[in-house]
Image (cartoon, rainbow, N blue to C red; front, side, top):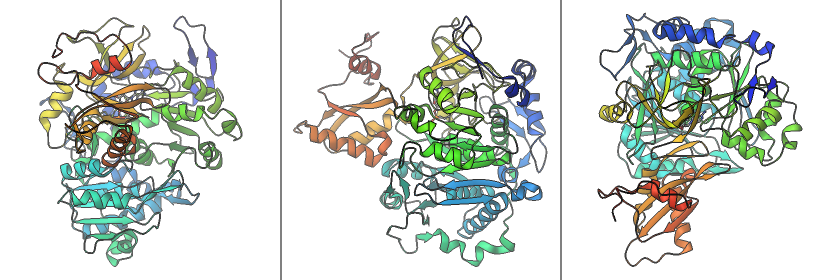
Length: 635
Ligand code: PRX
């Protein structure tokens, strides 16, 4: 990749002619203009590349905005595209998944083998009473069974709700309860940093708090002793050994769904403490994720793809599980920590498995940068062709390190901006486009983005404002599960007709977007999305805390870290030990990722006259910055 810094705008990286000529989209401008002129047709043409049981009568129904519908009337099931149709082609014997456990164990699945496992588990789920439309919670580490479980649910038309394995008791309980899942699929534990994460014990504690779960299926991964409650808990391998798993010669019919039927719900943080589940569907979602992955990561038949995300987050749903399988790609998945037992673990696996395309998060890059280039350089990374990042803005220094040290200045870096809600990449380069470190580039084909002020007026280029999206897209969220008002309120009411992202951004004169960060009560810690309200309610659930407020403060590696301000109950004395106890309490309730870096005890919190905590003021005070407009402050 040529390095051209002569452009007036600063640093621009141009693709090599080889990258351009091999790209699915050799000319960004041309395809962008075509899609912009008729985005509905653009998506309809892409949808034709997939298999449907019955065609659509209408591509996009906008009659009940913002409840958009895509591929109206079409019949499909994403699993048909991800697995079934490959069984009739040579891909049946192609590897779908290569997996390495943290201790070094290896498992591989061809498309045929993955299909067989999914069918068997789908039969088991059916025999346990699971039906179309039922919600099923999945809480596992990064093991092949999490992929199998998700696909098995989708195959029978059940709606999966995957809870990230790093979440803990209360986070798990709240999400199970909200989804009213009768079935919970989990594992005894998972390996991380040489230690066992005791998933089953967290499940046991969470289930003491909720009444809806009837059965728990447990995958044996770590083999440590766990409590199995008779009549409620079953081992996965025992169930798969039953004749019921093998009915009809290991086959299980794929349920034919309406394109708009829900495929999954995925909880994400918002502005209140109540969990918010984003709803994605079978039809539009499959078109959106497959198209974006194919164009942005230039997927070729012979590629080996590694997205390091956990299936518990949207990146894992879209680009570990669904898009790679729809495209017939070979994916690699790794269970554990990037630095276990040494900081070259990832690079060692890139070399060993011949990964061509590698997609990770800025926080991971910054974390690995700390250990120096020697760890990367001892491995042969010449197999890499393309790199990617997601989850938070990447600072140009980390971008350059990634490009130079990992990509050897040959591999374009795709900085993809998107969200749980968008389901697919929304602002992103393609390999043939000029790159600017720190910018996610321009909107994906067919999309238009804008930066606006409080009143909704576009701000001049170079100025900061609220990032909005102007057009519907096929993988868009359809609603908030069980709460359509919240969907309208949160995303479509501030600027009717435009989707509110919750991010602030700038656009430059070339139309490139520079995302700055969240402007709501969401904090990104190491790329993980956490809500202030959920952490605050975990803090006040401790008997010594009367009130709490949390904010995110900048951190060189993690992007942000959590600082908590607590007012103690009368008679409780502040102490460093209590601060530690509260950190641990948050870790136990929400998960280790939510543990505050600092807990401070205060007498009062800055509030508006109507009693809302002004986190913005807390943040400014903590950083010794100007508090801004404080006219609404209580005192
Ligand atoms: O703030 C943006 C940031 O991550 C948020 C969405 O988080 P989540 O729903 O967890 O999904 C993350 C993975 C898609 C966004 O509102 N974000 C995501 N990607 C980028 C980003 N910020 C800057 N650059 C990105 N590439």
